[in-house]
Length: 360
Image (tube, rainbow, N blue to C red; front, side, top):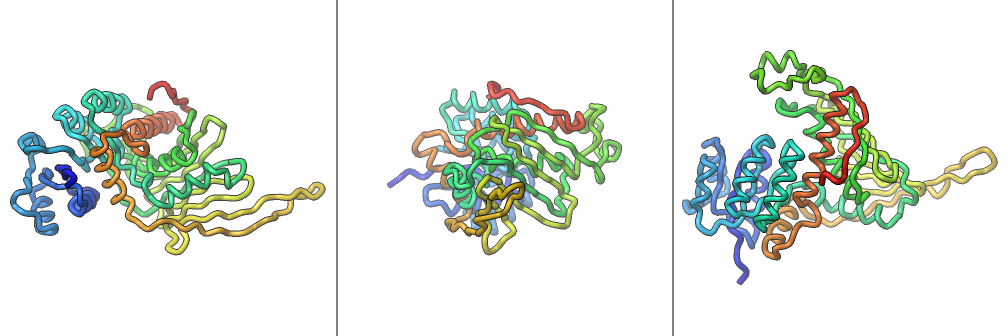
């Protein structure tokens, strides 16, 4: 009989409860501890998931050190807490699955990857979209050159809220689409640019509602951007344009890659065909360009909850003692590095920022 991996889930808020549910249902996992600073959250999940008294329910993070035979820790807490929690967990000898982003600082991410390697423990980041069946199928389409010569990419991620008070729309929303484009292209950007607009939470408003130490001192910081426009440039000069806004009642989750033969569209809001190829190209007749070969192909995708796939992947990496080829700490570090560079550009009014690939 295969050994069950003993797991502690840390943080059972909006996303953590879904991780808890999946590991409780996983045949090769055993949830032996749940940690959350809010006692009410612990009471709710214990009742909701019928957890027996053998499962440690605690508000104290360091209490998990006393759990006999603990193998892994699942961290679903605010990103600002990730570095210290993951560092502790790795030093104590546990494998770690962390909610995205890995941390808010590229240097911290690199140190965590080094620590995981030194401790010979798996460090995996929950970039759920990388396990979405539509994203997996989309990558196969792009890598098989079904779109012809790639020309550009675009994405829109908008909704009316939730409005964050710890990070702007860039850090809240962009990581999903950047992760997908990096995965589909099998590359990371070499240059990034971002511009933003603040309506709701200006620097002055933040200073009035938060401690001064929590508000950046930079004179370039104007507040938390509600609207952000992002441009990513990849090594082959392929460019991606991303529209991000949490102050837009037109909810969109749409991403596309345009090629010489057609466009690949991933539209989460479509209940019937979330992934399709819109074929079409031009035929030149004299000085005119005539659209030809236009047709639509709806791509079938496997059925399955992406988060369940994340959890299964984490368990498999532990059992096989192999690093993740999909969402390792390195992948998480690359994404944080990109977001940090975009933040620099945002605070400099959209000036280009070049990424140094050697930093990874």
